[in-house]
Amino acid sequence: MKKISTGFLLVWLFLSCTADKTFVIEGTLPHSKYNGELVFLLPFAEKGSERVDSVLVENKTFRFEGKADSAEVWILRMRHLLRMDIQEHLIMIEPGNIWVQLDSVSSSGGTPQNDKLQEWKEARLKSHKITHLLWTMSRQASHDSIKQQIRSRWEQENTAFKEFSRRFAQENKGTEVARFVLEITDP
Image 1 (cartoon, rainbow, N blue to C red):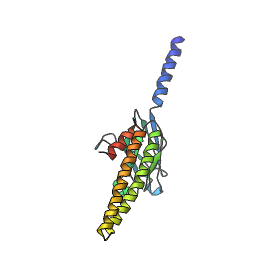
Image 2: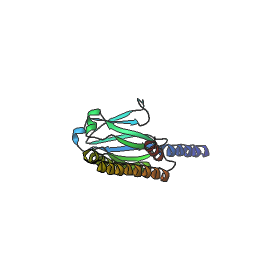
Image 3: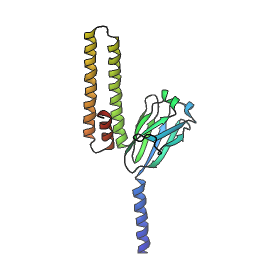
Image 4: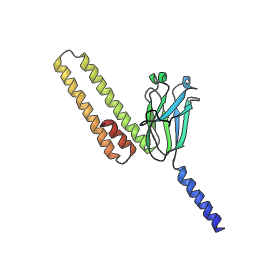
């Protein structure tokens, strides 16, 4: 009887340890016109990787499930022509439940590193909107002195975002999201 109890205990411990290493991605899309389309999940760092997964969109939703031994950056995307309307989206594959909204500006969260990655992406989007506006203003400016002032402000915004990214990485030191942000910010 003692051997049977020990055996059940070992099986329970094994199952409880492996259950924590799974991820679920629950995603939504904005319109039923995407029903029947594929959503692809592929590793960010591996070009031409054999580790590509895909699922069909049904009722404006999709779902991926799998094992996640550690956190890793992946991309969610749709077929090429649909990327004009649906932004491809970076996510952290890590144990837990991840929510994703694929749209013209996509978002995700639900796990610690996905929440942090979303925070960084929102700051990046805000910074890019500012720098794009400044770039447009610079091209339309008629005087060199005004162009120089705008370019100076553009450089300040780029520097400020790089500094934000460095602080963000430092605050999240030791995580995959910190490594990724540093790699993107300081290649």
